[in-house]
Length: 306
Image (cartoon, rainbow, N blue to C red; front, side, top):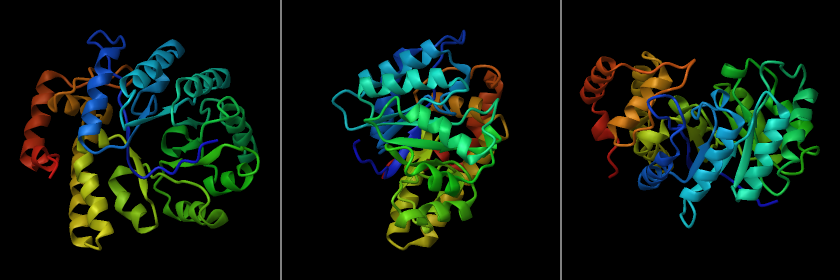
């Protein structure tokens, strides 16, 4: 297995749709170019931001193929999210990701029928990871959406010797106590990219070196400045930039985050289309109101690369 330590920004990308809700793979190349131009190192495809639970297996397979075509020969690398309620689907996606040459795979746990214990969770992740044995595997911890409140540090303790290609945890949780426990496990042997954009600075203070986020699609320069200021010991600037993230995400969440985030991408010239039900999309009037608010905030200046 190739070793991998995710540093810098990993953008959790949107799945682009046509106005009628069908998948629009032609946009992927523009997404990849936009991320690269804004200093993003990795694309995390088909995850929560990618509305994976609203995609068919065939759509997810096609999405992976298109992304790997789009980044061929480029520095931008692709991590494929393969988690699903059906473990057979997850295994299929993991095997495909390895065949396509992705740099890693990640999987959220089944969340309709939930694993009832850490041991059962490890069983699920081991089953998926074994289908891509040559790729680093990341368990995707996101209790806010899965409703699975099992200890990620205990997961590491039980999975470390069970899953040979376990690279770490995509840690999308605001439980910074557990984050520290995971970081301390075996002297920091596992990678823990942090996934709560609006409190990224807190994770940096605890040792994070990489982050996976949905708002990196349209606001990467803000987070690059957070990281740069923190590394320089300039906490005043780091806090100010982090608060810009807080203000931005609050505005989007107030309108339904998925639809508002996709509308923001369109404002930046990368039209990823509407959200797919059960997520909602913004009307033209709502988009105009959001744009006015973002202009008032200074968002379009914030996301210029210096």
